Length: 111
Length: 111
Image 1 (cartoon, one colour):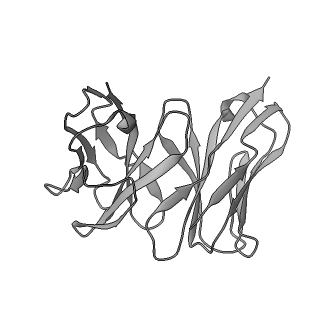
Image 2 (image 1 turned 60 degrees about the horizontal axis):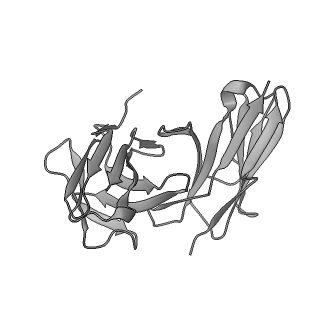
Image 3 (image 1 turned 120 degrees about the vertical axis):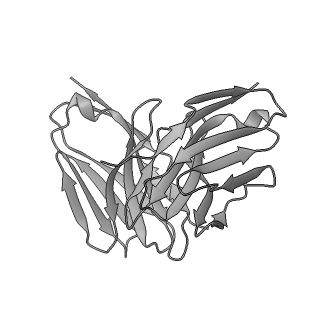
């Protein structure tokens, strides 16, 4: 059974600081997604990572994938208040359409 | 950017009643999904749909649930006899090649 663990589950940080959210998964996968969710809203696609060593960046967010370690990271650079949200990673296993989500990391960026 | 649309945004129903949640996936996408999120919890897979049939379903998706693509644009989730524990946000999603796009969700409240 594919399991996805994120940590930390809660993250409070100051504006301007850097931090990393970790996503570990238990079996080989073919796709890893990062999503952002604001309270009461839908899931906004941030990144999809398909291969070992993949790195994608958008603004202050950078995601990477290490398939050998079964680990993805979401790095936040010089955080701003607008980044406050819950971030989910989600993984699918080869041959399956089912995405398994982590519990999410609730990020609060304080001025 | 194209989007997945869902209606209604909120649905209140009495236990035991049937509900139909509606979705219009992105037009050139081939894979369609339903996920749900109980308040404050992680997102859970319900079902995937491809080529006019269910390709995969979870243990949650029992005989009380069904999906249909009645025409070329709509994708529906029916819950035959709702239970209190069906209260959740239901998200429709569609996928083209890589990215999985989620709709804004239907908040279902079963009283």
